[in-house]
Amino acid sequence: MLRAAGRRFLRLGSEHRAPTAAVAARGYHERVVDHYDNPRNVGSFDKNDPTVGTGLVGAPACGDVMKLQIKVDDATGKIVDACFKTFGCGSAIASSSVATEWVKGKHMEEVLSIKNTEIAKHLSLPPVKLHCSMLAEDAIKAAVKDYEAKKTKLAAGNAETTQTEKVDGA
Image (cartoon, rainbow, N blue to C red; front, side, top):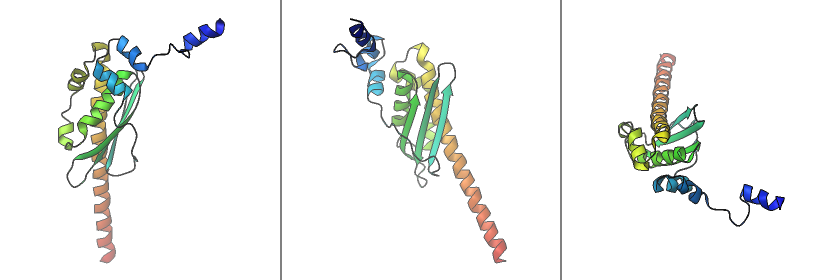
């Protein structure tokens, strides 16, 4: 009897339900449930790749941490791929997933115009979960900033190398 109670408590018995049913029961919108159950673009790129920008943000109040990465085509300035890893609630995971879908194929300037309110509206997030969409917006901005910093550093390194070559050749 104790074993059966333990199984029910741990949900090991046949009455175990899929996470979707538990999430849906709490009143999350179907888009949140879909992105939580089937997150898009989970993974990571090499952070040392000069074409990759990494945004790492967190919310100390709730413990959510979000890493969003973008891969940019240097020639066109378009984001060709995006991925994320998120430690947090279903709304944070869904917000990250949506953000990666929205940034793909867009120019750097375009993705900076993505607002947390748009993500929250798309997912129908309740007011208590708005910080998740704010994290997604911040992660996008941080990834773009990181990419641009790498690009500037690379350009400065190339200019320095050119100057050194001129001095050595003279």
